Amino acid sequence: MLEKTKVIVDVLDIFVSLKRGLTLTDINFQLNNIYASHGKTVDQQILIEVINELTTAGYLKTFKVGSLDSWKITEEGEDHFYDL
Image (tube, rainbow, N blue to C red; front, side, top):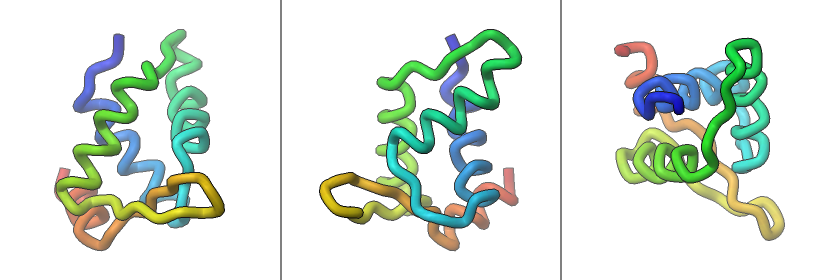
């Protein structure tokens, strides 16, 4: 099982690198690409907890694309990532 802290850093890294809105499926796909070489996968529940925590902290903002929830990193989120 992956550490939640590692998943948080990697989620922020994905958002900073891609600089666009992402759905839960997009985020999960990107994370699993990162962890596949180590033989690990991301538990969907941990990913949802991480996204909710980052959104509550103001590091991600939520918006709708059609019927899908999407997230995008905020300036505070970028600053937090670079401070890690």
